[in-house]
Length: 236
Picture 1 (tube, one colour):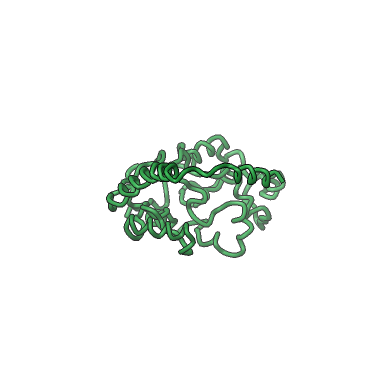
Picture 2 (picture 1 turned 90 degrees about the horizontal axis):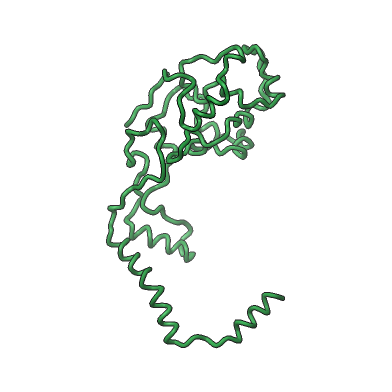
């Protein structure tokens, strides 16, 4: 009812004169036109501006190694996106640069000892876990240009290991007790998620890394597991 009253009120107002309409349209069109001309004549010489800090180990990585130019010229990308907005095309175009994908990460970080490879999280049996944590890409947990190494809380192990049963438990505090106590932050205290550190997992709960040290590490701090890696990242 309120909507009908508002519509009736506006219908009783006199329409602006043609001259006024033209003035408003011209005022709105000028900045839009100038911006369009600047973009169209700029060609493909756009530059990358960092949106924030990079990972501590990425200081020597060039922007172009991760950010690949999107297909087509800027003009073509704009035209495709206009068609998409108007409903004339079923898909839009990446503007300027493509989104960073896992393939860019694996160019340097691919290794045969990976404990949690990306393809495993894409399997149907892990759909429930993926509903809790977006681990189908590297960027599900890791985000560049943010002052942190990992963007998720250190309790994500529960998404896959809540029903873990070990025939032979090497830890002095059984894993089923830790699971029953929902002590999920203790997992990373012993286990390196990607399995690339040479330091073996402790067999005593007291020897596990403290939560504060792990949280600092996830926030781009020092590595509590040690700096000796089985496979070093190879820049290509």
